[in-house]
Image (cartoon, rainbow, N blue to C red):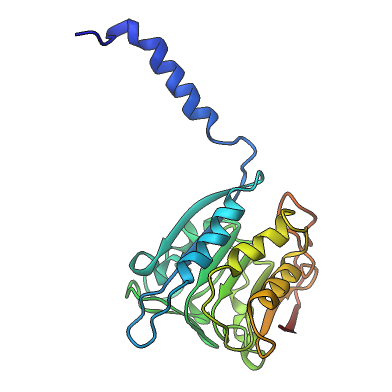
Length: 247
């Protein structure tokens, strides 16, 4: 037997441990997450939400100031990951989405919330289930149809438990593969360095026809937030700002 054993193997083991430690960047302090659903009941299934969410997650998670916490799709993407435990059911957002600084969802939406394929706790996250930022979340993007419709955006006011801003769509949007990555490229300087809401509006313009309207809802003082590591952030006020942008 030619392998090293006992004390002879210790230096090699120590070296491997040191390599493992070095592989985790010390500068990665802020955390992002993403979930996506393609596999809805027919005829409502989608095709590109996995690529869309992965584009956001891996681009932002690969930035020197950020680290990807988790990304789940289809049956592993759960409504309870986004639900606050103070609401009905078994919400555990405090150890999932609200334990990160920036959360992204890609799937079907409606003015009342957004949809999952799993029934844990159920297949739809309503605005009344959400309370974000009371743990850690600062920003959330819901890449889904009509979640931020102008005539119902006030439904989301009570979901701001410390959240700075929420981006999404006023109208229906399309099933595209590259909006998430486009969005991040515009925030972190690989293409340009823009505030979150501006980056979202331009990413939507790049990936949607002119009949689509993107939307944003923010606490006063936070409309011009940049992501951490790439600019300044405002202090959330008590009032809200809402706007739409024609793509």
